[in-house]
Length: 403
Ligand SMILES: Cc1cc2nc3c(=O)[nH]c(=O)nc-3n(C[C@H](O)[C@H](O)[C@H](O)COP(=O)(O)OP(=O)(O)OC[C@H]3O[C@@H](n4cnc5c(N)ncnc54)[C@H](O)[C@@H]3O)c2cc1C
Ligand SMILES: NC(=O)c1ccc[n+]([C@@H]2O[C@H](COP(=O)([O-])OP(=O)(O)OC[C@H]3O[C@@H](n4cnc5c(N)ncnc54)[C@H](OP(=O)(O)O)[C@@H]3O)[C@@H](O)[C@H]2O)c1
Image (tube, rainbow, N blue to C red):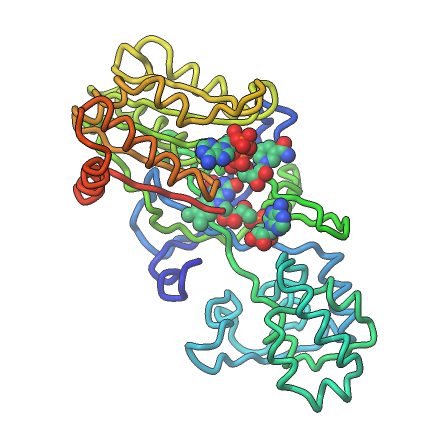
């Protein structure tokens, strides 16, 4: 997450959502696009590889339930004064508000009332079990200070617990922005941003259905909403710099990792309309061809003759379906099959860009590249680590990973 100073340096705008019908109805991944219509604080234009920070709205039912459980008056006004740089509220949009603010607005904008932090739950439950009454809690502030996070789920399970609002502000996790790679090129879609968002959901060991705050909220927005939906967003630089059109590229982006590479390919398509562009070799991976082959038509059309991903131009689009056969097939398997092509592009000075959500994927891809370099160039495996380090130092090896 960005620090307060990073946010100040980035652009701020408002996005209005439009939902694109997925090419794949069974997938839990949505491409949400939004037209940026708000004001921007900086004149710097966004580029492929940039990231959009989105401040999620919250489920109004959860906000109301939280206010009710805490016996708060939603219409009362409060004044908030951040005390110092240590205070997490400094990193919150509430700082833009001067003077008194309605309590409900404060909760909506700054407190993640249904926060998904399951790992902390047992710890919180133990402490609240030990101190179920407000009087005991009040006399035991040090115990409360040990609670890392407090949320609606905990409050619902311990209805007798009453905690002063001043304490709630510190105990409930602050509402944080979520980052999404731009999956559209600003040159191809001026004044719009397209995102590729996986809708996060899971079931806890106690069979509670839990969903990711921001992805679920975005998925639930209605683009037909007559008044429009305004979303506070901030642009900032990601880990993938925009490549010059003359730089050959090896892109590896399974799952939602394809998001920034949609933007790269769109940008190259715009550039190729007015000049020559270098080869792009893209390895995509998903579970099933029928269920989550994101942007199938987009990739395939760019892989056709003369396209950005075409063999004619020295590139290709290669996909690994991990679950369409008994043994898993990942992007690394496809890279090994194409090792000559990978090596020939690397020898021609290509940059490698890796993006995606798997925690293991980036390191597995790196090991695979080491194998390929060793096999094709004949250098011992130990030296390939140095080879890739040199590539990284030369500004030609980038990873954007999230979990
Ligand atoms: C630079 C960057 C770029 C990104 N780009 C993209 C992108 O293009 N597309 C995209 O979809 N995401 C992207 N992300 C991830 C994105 O920022 C969010 O983290 C993601 O959308 C989840 O946010 P959420 O609010 O929906 O979930 P949250 O409310 O934040 O919940 C997520 C949390 O839920 C818990 N959780 C999730 N699954 C489980 C499970 N199975 N079991 C137990 N607990 C679980 C974990 O505690 C996890 O931290 C990117 C992240 C970064 C840092
Ligand atoms: N419920 C669904 O239908 C569904 C569909 C898509 C995503 N999701 C969820 O969405 C989240 C992120 O989704 P995502 O689309 O970005 O990614 P993802 O679906 O988790 O992964 C994309 C592809 O990468 C593969 N992969 C897993 N580990 C890898 C590794 N070490 N190296 C290379 N490839 C690897 C996956 O294979 P395997 O998963 O087969 O191992 C899959 O084919 C995950 O939490 C996932 O659980 C759910």
